[in-house]
Amino acid sequence: MKLGKYVLAVFAILVFGCATPARADLKIDVTRGEVNPLPIAIPDFSGSVSDNPQLGQELVQVISHDLDSSGLFRALDKNSFI
Image (cartoon, rainbow, N blue to C red; front, side, top):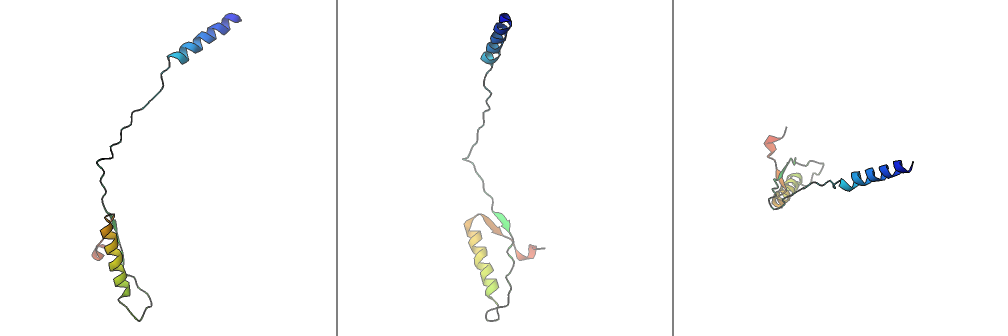
């Protein structure tokens, strides 16, 4: 019985003592990032405003300009809408 315990202890020491920790080398290069503007469709706003029917088009122009100037979005041409 005692011999079995010693064999088990020696076996455990050999197995766990010889094991090397697993590791993975991961390299991320963030110096060459590239961000392409996301295309976005902005349709004309319409509503029941009878005082200023151009208001919807003016809002779209302002929003399109703001999104374009941020560099993150590219407003699509209205002719490309489905």
